[in-house]
Image (cartoon, rainbow, N blue to C red):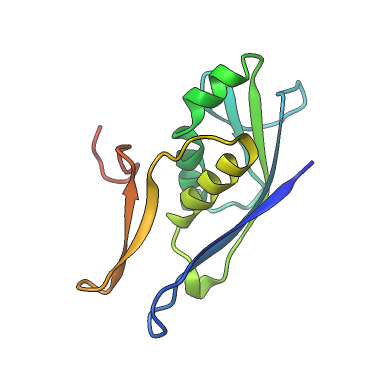
Length: 142
């Protein structure tokens, strides 16, 4: 059965906040799963057709930070199937896909907080993201 998590982070009136909704479900992998992304060993991610590549990358990253715990807890495998990622364009950055995936996983599996965060940098006038010791997948680092 699918469930939806709403991610909301308020910002200033002039610069808005961050928002996204993720509807997904999890199950054991099967033979008819079609194309999915292998995230870690026996943990996979299936995305709806038409998912933008940046959203796909950030959703995969959000799943990857929990993949070792999920792999251990589900030795027969786990498929996270995203039904929808929706967001208002005015309050969205692709990084929010990782944050909403993290929130969905923590809600579904009672997983520990991995330190994924967004915070407003008032000096720079932009959103900053922290990945809890995990490297930013677009930083070019290891």
